[in-house]
Length: 197
Image (spheres, rainbow, N blue to C red):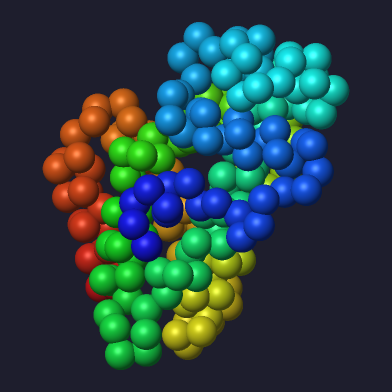
C-alpha cells in the first residue's frame, strides 16, 4: 500500500448518497489543503456545492469537521488490520510500521483537524461533543484484540491498548507541534521497546 492510497484510505465503493459524496470530497480537500482559515463557503466552492447543502447535511461547519474526523478515524481503525503481524513476525516490527503509517506527513492535515476538534469537544462546544462518545473507546477494543490474540489476558490487553492510544496521540501531537520527526521517532522506538520489554 503506497502512502497516497493509505493516506486517503478511500472507501471500497463511492458513496451513493449525497451526504457521503460531499463528505468524501471534503475529506480529500482537507487532506490536500488543510483547514487554516477555511470557511464553509470556501470549502463548498472548492468541492462543487453550496454552503447551504453542507449545512443541510452536516448541521454546521463544526458538524462537518466532526464527520470528517469520525470518517478518517474509522478508516484508520479498519487499516489497523493490514498491519497485523504474521505469527512469525515480531510484534515490534508491526507496531513500528503502524507508527510510520499514521505519522506520515500526508496525514498531518487530518490529524491537526482531529486535535482541533478534540479540543473543542473537551471545551463543551455543542456541535463537536459527539466526538467524545467514542474517541478513545473505539480504539481500545481493536487494539486490545491484537494482544488478546497473542495470549495476553483481556484486562491487561485493554490497559495496554489504552496506554498505546495515549502515547501514540501524545507523540502525534508532539510531531505536529515540533515537526521533529527524528526525535519523535526515537520516542516511539523507546515506547515500543518498553512495551515489549
